[in-house]
Length: 350
Image 1 (cartoon, rainbow, N blue to C red):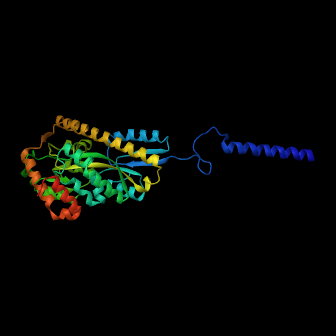
Image 2 (image 1 turned 180 degrees about the vertical axis):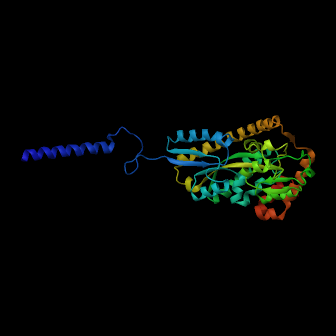
Image 3 (image 1 turned 120 degrees about the vertical axis):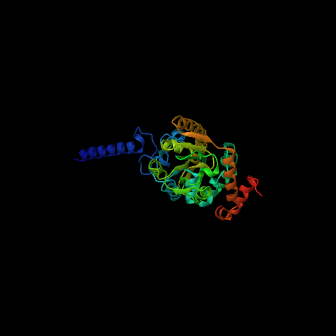
């Protein structure tokens, strides 16, 4: 009886030893483990945007995703979610601050919807050429200012891309001078500064979301709209418009933003990888965006839209309104006297 008991005890001990070996590393799975022995899950970083799958944001996001995931050995899982499935730009900017969303690639208009103080970047004729944009915005004092401002609000700007130069399209007449705007009903962004600019030209402004614009143009609720080549093309707005004026009246940039709530959870190595990949993706996006804009203006012209470059007369009319706005006390109050003084200095206004 005693011998039988010893055999049973030996068998039990052997089985316990085998279980212990398997539990402590006998498995062929070499993945990272959590403290309870389970597989370590990758950090999911969702990038929310409002643009279409063919937009430059969406295209460069593919390389961004690949680079980050490869360089972090799968520790980070990038998930790009476009088309506004996570909300509008304002909603997504607010979400990354709370930590409900990890990252958003948003236009500066989206940032200014949350922080109106940043709306100065969209003042008319502030950056009339790409040379001005590259020098003063993307690689200049504007980028420095926005980065510092947003950091204090819990948002890290990791890259500066491009939204678009804005143009004007309409179904009524060619626009070659300021007085051609009088009486037009135009859809404009829901920002007081935009409304001020166009009302100065005699426009009946109709703010509405971009998703409502195609129907409004088709049904002639409005005569035209203010947008760049990319949105005008991607949303098919040119199909309901006869005339376009490439006036470059307002420039809009794009910011690759991550909430500090998310940023602070990453290791220094992960932060560096994402920061470097963001700058690389931003540069690629700017290049692609500009190439796409030229192609799309050409395609819209070939489809029957009359595309007009800005005339010296229209440029002079726009600049006169812009200078008035640069000096307006309401904008010094909204954007800060220091910012408006910098703008006046940049423009040589005394």
